[in-house]
Length: 317
Image 1 (tube, rainbow, N blue to C red):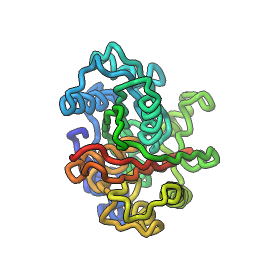
Image 2 (tube, one colour; image 1 turned 90 degrees about the vertical axis):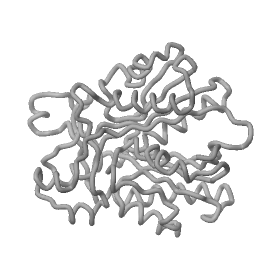
Image 3 (cartoon, rainbow, N blue to C red; image 1 turned 60 degrees about the horizontal axis):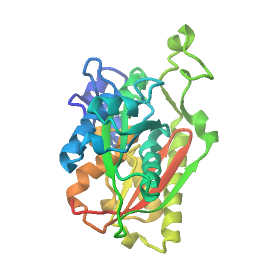
């Protein structure tokens, strides 16, 4: 996470809002903002990679593939993953980005796992990272209160003892694009003086339909996996949801009749960091995770994208 903290009190000085209003509607108290001059999403990815390599003993030349889930890439091209590989000196690897909004990490993890399970690669790194401050309108009180900047990285390796990803359910529905998107900047509406003047290069969201779709989407895919695996809530040690809004997380837990104390929640400290929320939770709860724990990751993102992954944790945190 970047060092700079943007608190609700800070936002009170920027837009017509207040600490109580933000906390009651989102659960967020503060978020991190990357303010280092010239730094972008790749900077946070590199920092996460450096931490991962120091922690695991991974050498840059051992990496086969890097997948970065992000919607705030440094450039439209080249991919952020390639910039990161160059920065850390990973000469034997290739990389690419996956755009799935807030489901970016989940979809990237699912993709990276296929390269491992196929036997093609031995070491795949997956990063969820977003510099949301770069696409937020800080005069729009409905959206600027939600987002923060962060990155998290995980290392995937082969396993023959039954640990790792057990099942997944990934979904998409393009009809939801009208409710959560960026209006301009792509080939459909290219950048122009008009689009800049109209503030069309920032997050646009219609909260109510997104709220309802997120609750139904995440709870439904979790139910599908549990039913398919013939498991109950008692079999799941932790639920790790995308940190979109505290009320959404509480509603998903209620829809599943899942104990809220078994739901990883840190949105109060970081806000919605889009693709980074799930790895950020895993990092914070790592010392509580035990080998063999059943963990469900779930997310919901603009466009719409959503899904869930069931994994059996592979080591004592």
